Image (cartoon, rainbow, N blue to C red; front, side, top):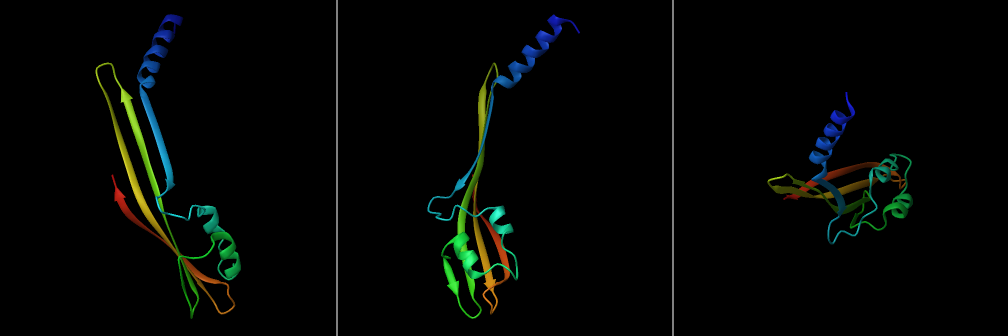
Amino acid sequence: MTQALRTLLLVAVLFLCAGCFFWAYSHPGSGSSRTDVDDKTLESIIVGSTTIEDILLRLGEPEEHYDAPTVFLYRWVRVKGFFLFGVAPSRAGGVASESTTEYTLHIAFDENDKVSRYKLSKTPLSIR
């Protein structure tokens, strides 16, 4: 391939890519105070080993607390979305999408104050 042909091909590829912009984001929903729960935190909860004290140190006070048997309930909201914008010689355009999900974490403890089970539920709230 000649130098001129390679340069022409490179210019064509750069022309096609230069007008594109993609941005993905994720953040806590407005009014959601719980921002520190992630996959790593959930993986650290071990049935039969993790104690109430461990959970309180990692996640703080629960939104709701039930006795006999002891159950903690944590809730938080997460917003995820993306924005794609493109420019061509004759036009420009873009697309955006955003979804809001509420997460609910139920943690039940046994009579020794150790985790007996836990469940994470996701509820889509809105998609725009």
